[in-house]
Amino acid sequence: METETSFFDLYDVDLKDKRSVIGKGAFSTVHRCVNKRTGEVCAVKVIALKSLRSSEINKIKREIGICSSLQHEHIVSMRRAFRDESHFYLVFEYVSGGELFDEIVTRKFYNEKDASACMHQILSALQHCHSKNIIHRDLKPENLLLASKDPNAPVKITDFGLAVIMEQGPTYFGFAGTPGYLSPEVIRRVPYDTAVDVWACGVILYILLVGYPPFWEEDHQKLYAQIKNCQYDFPSPEWDSVTTAAKELIKAMLEPNPKRRPTVQELLQHPWIARRDVPGSVHRQATLEELKKFNARRKLKGGVNAVIGVSKMMRTMQEATRALTLSAKSKQAATVAEKQDTLVPAGPAKAVLEVNDELLKAVASGDWDAYTTMVDPNVTCFEPEAAGVLAKGLAFHKFFFDNRSPNADKMKTTLHDPAVQMFGDTAIVTALRVVQFVADDGPKTTRYEETRVWVKDAAFKFGWKLVHFHRSGAHATPN
Ligand code: AMP
Image (cartoon, rainbow, N blue to C red; front, side, top):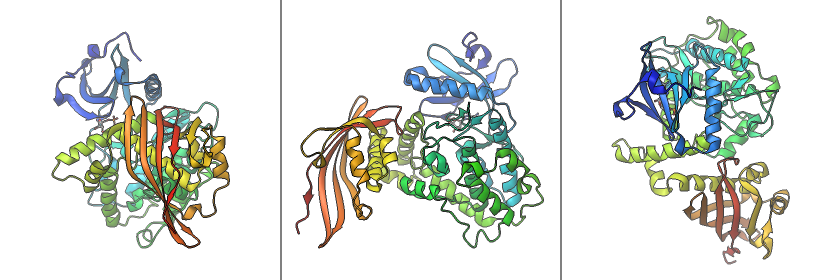
């Protein structure tokens, strides 16, 4: 990273001129700029230091290190990076073709050969990353761009914000990625390696062939269960016209055991990828129709598909809030977004409520691993189970997870009237929790009042940890 030469010495851009803006993230603005010496048009991501915590500054430095070590025709190339007292300036090659999936749906003709050509380019970029022990960790349609509007423009992988360098074999780098593309080993929270990118490519290839994803559930816990159990299939009629070679390839990439999954190197030798004469040549109109719907859905549901990783989580929340404001103003406002806008608080309060929701899901499903990614090891609580004492630490709660009622799966929990109060980095969530269950004499409902205290902490899965909670005794429906 250059600190001696100023970004402004080498590049022409007027950051105050709104016309130079080509995109926005929560912490960054992307401007079009021109290299004064070569005349090359570039995209500069300008990130204000004052909006960043030290852990986020370290992540940007890691991203700069990784991007500057990658030079490949199918990777959006970083030209230079600068830092001054107030900003980072990350200069990238300018790509003008938009997202690959948005372009595919405009095609008049699309077949397996086209899908194979896209996958070949993605894999060759990945081969370059993996040869340097770099794991991308966030491969998904949003990060597959086209260099230009030309019909044969190359595909380019972008966004190395979650990428990591693997120094000594499989390592647990944390729970990171985007839900629908997470591999079973990431979900199991065990050490993992470059094979996670192969899994994500398997998901992408499935979508490229039929236009919808192999794993799909609104509820993240259910989605993760589907992925862990590798529950996907090749339904008729849309898969009937796909060649056996393509299906076998997907099965190999979506192999739950990462050790048995092929490497990128091996995939590039696979006949369906390497020899373009193998893939089927039937025009796949139904895939284009499905892909249009899939593109629309994922753009609406940015929040649902949120990237996991703390700063990314916050960024997604802020972007979702921005999208809601925009959609409320727009005539073509999305119904889903508008509904969310009126039902759910915005900004950090919204983020906390979502984490609170994830926590209740972990409790309801008895998922101890998920629970501990959100709860401080020194959590304190006052609740009926603690019989009037202030219980401290996780061990107290582990007992209840280990000795779960056999009927727990039949209970239904809903949260009513949740409210969030923010005090700097602390959030207090108050709500009514209603539990429905079946007793010997029929269905029953119990109500509790709950207060949960969350504190921002980047070391926890969603950037928040539960430090205290308080639950009233049960108000049960009369017999
Ligand atoms: P990001 O924060 O990386 O998601 O970038 C925000 C937006 O800036 C993107 O959605 C693009 O519209 C634009 N952008 C980012 N990088 C580039 C690039 N290299 N070339 C052209 N536009 C870009």
